[in-house]
Amino acid sequence: MPFSPLSRRTVLTGLAVSGGVGAVRAQAAIPTPVHFVTRHEGRFNGRTVRYTATVGETRITAAPERPAARFVTTAYVAEPRDPARPVLFLFNGGPIVASSYLHIGAFGPRRYDPPRDVTADVVPPYALVDNADCPLDVADLVFVDPPETGFSRLEDEAARGEAYSDRADSLMTTEFIQVWLGTAGRETSPVHLVGESYGTLRAALTAGLLSETRPLEGLVLLGQALNMIETSQRSRNILSYATNLPSLTAVAWHHGRIARDGGLAARIEESWAFAMTDYLDALRRGNALPAAESRAMAARLEALTGIGRDYYLANRLTITKVAFTRELLRDQGLILAMYDARYAAPAPAAGGPATDPYGKVNAMIPPLLARHMTETLGVTLPMADYRASAPRPGPWAYAPSSGAGGPFDDYNYDRGVEQAMAANPRFRLMIGTGVFDTTTTLGPARYLADQAAYSRERIVLREYEGGHMAYSNPDARTAMAQDLRAFVAWPRSST
Image (tube, rainbow, N blue to C red; front, side, top):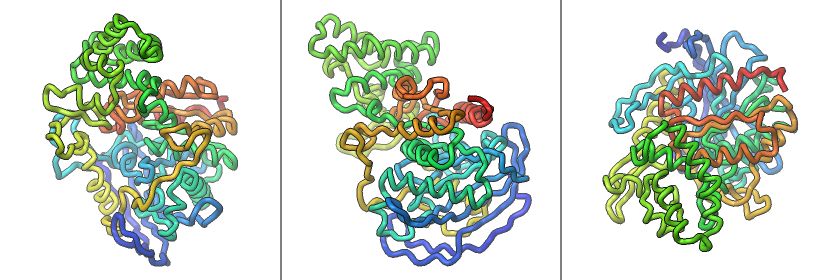
């Protein structure tokens, strides 16, 4: 059924936003809260749902380690309202970007429509279509734009230095969720968090903080980054080369650079088994590996990744993910996208600027989100003031644990999941990874699940035939949405 408002009621807003993206000056007081309300009907997963959409403001006050802020979020709530109905809070990464991708790309009631053919041109005007994969049939949705992104703002721009850290970010998000639930009368609703990319760090830390006052039901991590130490490829970090190998195999399989016998899943499993045994042992042995064994290993790597054995012999049997995207189709003059290596584009000339092959898909998000906000949701704020990402006057700060701190060092983000697991015996974790993603790859997600300090039975591990934003593949989006529905609907009486 076509998506159309049944009725529309727009409430006056008095948001005074300073400048556009990157503006740095004092912000005016905001006397009137942001509040736009529209009512709709849509068909999701074969079920007709009437719902209210609210683009609204939630204010949080200052407290130790966190500044005051105004969260402007988009909530979709099914009618009639049911306090027992699950609520999903969804946010992207960045570490501070708006929720545009999950909102208009994956789980909102309207979405973009990228071509199924990754070689096709993507040019405006872009289509904004009904999203049957939106999970409004099973849960209410709140898309969260962190402060300084979207229309959300810190009360004082001078507080950015304090706000731009994982600790402050998770404290602000935790307080926002608690205030939103209280204001909406949803204190008893089952709550799930859905984070993507760097948003998985926010999700894990927030889950741990929330578990101290109100246990969560579940956590969904898409393109997870909790164990970036296994995902990033620092020199001599041999484990990271092993965990990343299956993703290189998947990409090489897609581009026809390795044998496709048995299908994609079988080749991934073959690569994973090899990576965690013979390959990891060979990397460990390093200079002690006999030349004959090194040549045999290089030949096996060539068969699994499509990169010539001579390259491996010249590079200690390793290739970085960045180098892989440049080498696999070098003979065709093409480079691959890091976020979704199904996409390719002409390699830049020496010293010339690089083109992101996936950029043509990302370009669809801002104009379509603006259309959805203004045409569907009745937002009259200037979309020029909607920030895709926060201004960055200084570096994002990561609190240290046993190392120097940060996701590329030794920071135990998974401890937040451990806290949430301990607080609620029904709590479960879902991890979804795109097999063609060369940023947050499938191997580290498997490794995280294998090494977790909680029961493997409480983890749902899923892999999709897509990239970092796997939902740009229609089949992957539908599979992901179905997995999310099943995860949310899992019997809450179970232990």
